[in-house]
Image (cartoon, rainbow, N blue to C red):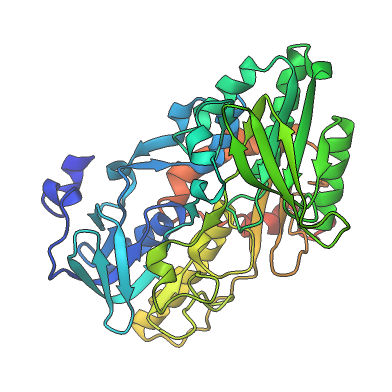
Length: 436
């Protein structure tokens, strides 16, 4: 693959930092799902050397599969590939982190101090895991029965530690901050429950889901479904409980009670045998410190066109954006179509109408082996946008197969290449009347 890319530029360009005088038509910050979906199409349209991707990682992870790895249903090796294999061949890969953005000067400063200039900027940097946001978590995670499916460093610990449980409390947490894939914190609780039942120890293990939010899921249709699943599995759901501290050696987790109830502001400490943590998350500092950010630190874009509210040559998508919808790969796929259309029209001076993003997102809520609730909805309206004719709030083997076996292939073969824009076209055929 590298040899083939050398047709466009020397092989070493795949790995070398760009010199301080570098300038590109488009710079994309981020080599995640959204960044690659956008850069693949734009670099193909504009030609070699016009698009640069700033990405410090050397491996790309298909993060939606991490829940399956944590539940022992997929191999970790299925989740990652070398970044050099997925960066589009016509794009220049700058293997560094962005340290500063100056939208007034149209420049990005890299970690080594060099500067990259752009005509247009796409920010697809993702969101930062903040393990330090919970007291004691950094010291405890990866041992002491503490794991997280959100990190490639710790995801394999999840299944390892679950297998060691014999009795006691298994705790699963959801923080108060925005997170990517907001369904993942509870998915692993269902898989753990299934594992404990298969081992014949479920009556000796209490499964407890602690969420800082006031609902188990944001959309009522799927909240009702997940509450029913949790009740049928005897999983305790604790609302308005935010994890604030972990004592690894003592195997204790401390939660602050949120909300406006009579116990609001109190703390409760719970012993655990296993603890799955969804860490707090935050915007990257280089965004938060820039003129691109809104008050919360996310890139401030129009929620329909994905164009920045102040700088017309800047766009953003995915987890780093201010878009008020759930942060998922499915959302990024739908957003990428809108962004690419609108940015290319601006570059070409076209008067074609702008495409508008409607908030579509999806959260496949795996509830067991061969069982899954396929939540699809608009994060803007809370309205379900289901692709298929059956009620996707019901646990279904088809939904599991689609998520576990079909979509991973779509991700590698189509989304990262910019040719998968979400299921809207399929929905017109498979559920034309939106009957469910």
